[in-house]
Image (tube, rainbow, N blue to C red):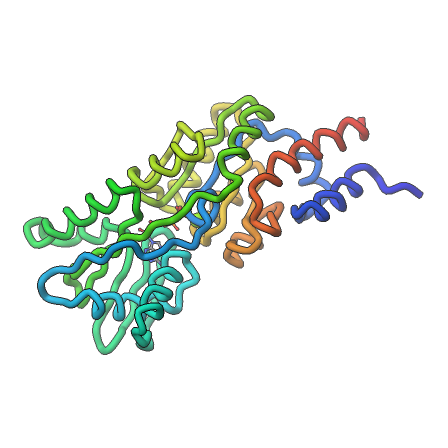
Length: 295
Ligand code: ADP
Ligand code: MG
């Protein structure tokens, strides 16, 4: 017997690197009217490199990096991996961490060498009195103006430095944005927890004009709902723990297979097994063709 069209479409999608979790998902992919992308790890390779270290007078750059790497070591976030890799490459032994805590979309905190070390988004500075943080804030602004992601390191509650991380656009990103614009009639949008400067740099490279930056996981959910309220059927592509609630809210959630966190993979309706963005327009097109056969 010949396979029903939706099942053969699932098999074909699988051969092309997209794991579609059900026939219902395979069918609904055709309804996508707008695609939204997460940035870090999704439109970018998610393997950022440490580009610059800025420290206050109280601490040496390598000591700051060593402590930050200790706090980041238990985290699977791409920024955490970059910090740990940078420490190892400089021959710094990564110290053990205890009482580790991570907040999706914000950062990490742990006890390292008996000190409370936090690494995370620059809003960490908002808990500090303004005059003490002027120098650090300047370093954050400089890094962001260069299109980098700036993370702040605090030691025992004192801001001690800024790590500037440089990420790279995935090679297929711009072509994928172009195909999706042609296919759905709407230019994809960017939803990111990162700063507006880094978001704008990346969006310009990818050909995206509509960017929403500085979003916490719950804000990503709100943005998806807003877009749905405008009558769009939203397909969201993401990789992080921070994307999971929005992946569940979107009409269809798609996770990056290699870069993706376990939670994103479980929550998503489909998985890009090879992290190849160009398979997104391909699978929407496949769904449309399968539907034509069914009807
Ligand atoms: P995106 O939405 O672009 O994938 P995330 O929501 O994962 O970004 O992260 C948003 C911001 O939170 C980062 O730019 C960084 O400032 C901070 N952050 C999150 N996790 C970490 C971490 N493990 N170490 C340092 N900073 C982090
Ligand atoms: Mg991400």
